[in-house]
Image (cartoon, rainbow, N blue to C red; front, side, top):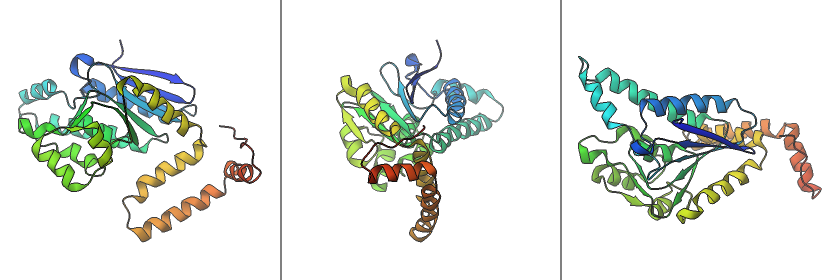
Length: 261
């Protein structure tokens, strides 16, 4: 059985992390599977939205601590292996946000440490009521410094710092209030609600969403003046597209756009 299952439903491709006995930890194998699959999907014109979930009791429990402990056997105590691991994980996170398609996390059970980082990295997230989120490394003496990058860019800094320094979990509803997830639904409705959101996004002009996602992550790191200058240029290029002209004409003429997606 594959460690990462891939299924396609129309314009939506669903990825399922499938290592329930390890709580879908971001092991070497899981990171490799995610990187390869995302790289492939980035070139897949038939996929307009990607959803990501986990099997078993958890969405993702972070890094595989057993693998990390084994790395200590090297002469440098694991320093090179640890750096390589965190670099590979960062590449997967960067790949999620550089994908032309929006990526939606479908979260249940727990999302801890690098698993919480993965939720924070995804473009949107839908969580089951009862899901717990945490960056709990401090509880075992390992501050979640790399998960902090995505988390602190999703929620207010004082709340992020509290989570990082106390190691306490927050509820799905608290995660929604802070902006870590978009929607919270009863667990039986989780898959349907995620699919509903994915289908809604997939119904839009794919080229426009691709342009917008790339611009979103570029402008968010800029100051306000630079962001307006940059996004103004982006909108000009968007307006010059034939399919955008068709979308505007259809709106003015009160008809459905004739888009060849």
